[in-house]
Length: 592
Image (cartoon, one colour):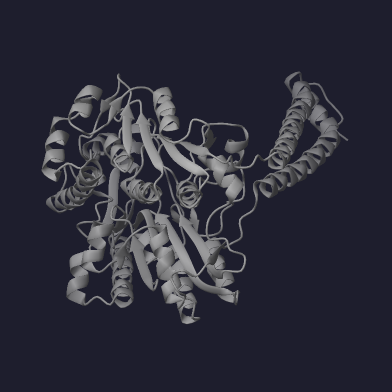
């Protein structure tokens, strides 16, 4: 037993040491790389491969993924920032983007598409390539983005899968019944739909109409963009969609792409059309050399606060380079607003939101700080990304202005909650539960017992209270009358374009449009140079790694302490083990 315990602790210590040494090497590599930067060539062609759906910030784990050279998608903000800098940079002659692995949301595609169109307006060449626009899904969004480019190339073996949009919605009610699981949920109201999969057998008329309205507008936006980019009539594009998927030759004959070929041919062509002496440079490397836009040290200071990911209470640990997806942590975002308000140099706050919602209490915490910022004289502009729905809309609605991409998913003013009752499942498994409680509603959330009639009444009252509070604040913040509010709420989800039409947002546009609105509210001239300052201040990759090494050092101290405890306990453990054997043999033993 002693050997087992000491060996286990030794393994922990060894892993800690190896990880620490590895991170030390990464730090050295990072510093060495920073020192060996090469300038932007006099003639440059930028290269970018879009992977998946570009995120706003790359997630907390982006630092180490970049360092170890894994498949790391360039973030949405990096793409737009780099293209904005390149548009005004005479050294940059062209752009080649590989969309083979691109699966962007429509809102992300719109933000990048607008940046490409601005790049082309400056007289620069922009070519798009994909081996296929169908494998992996979201071919329609990826091709919508490609339609902004001067030329589109596709590999001969590829396929153009612009087949439109569809939602497959699972219904689990019958399966749950077979398992003995009883869903006990409630929602406000009929368009919220979050619990329908557990209690219905098919789409309700309300939810089906909601999906049809939503997908219809997203499809119209996609068709209009493709038609505009490819100089085709919208009806002609719709007819091609109904024929899709199309082979590469069919797509070329229809005028949807310009050429059938390979990526090396695209690279050769853009060199011939720009300058044969031009050097190819990765877009993220270019951005690392020139830095992001809107960073004039003498410019007017505008705070940039990110609200990305599910809304959660507390702070979370977003500093870990090994972290996973982003979360909109209420304490972190609230603190960021307070810091921005306290900074006398901050003229306005740009709140970038990409969140599907989450905790009602956490959303309320952030909403309060947005209100306080406005009351303190700091204008707030909410810039919506791919989704700002439910709690994501809640944290945005108090802003002075709300700017959403036409394809942003927003609204969903409603609430749902509940639990699965597992007593039927336990019966099938032969598992019995008993309970001791003090208080009539103690154990109300237990999955082992159904709600009592009184508890069910309290649960429904909670849903009514949350919905009424949410709807009232939307009405107050957006100046909507009660009748109008009922038409836009009740759980309905809107596209950004629809949200503007019904009064839930002020205008359609991207990050730069929101920045222009922030300047206007701060009474700054449109051409005023600014300094965007992220709140809370971002830790550099090196700082994050050093923090992790410090955490590992503390872990190592704890392991060493455990080892000392093991040395003390080991003799006693040996005696207990001997006593056990002696007991089996009826042999007396002295345990003193």
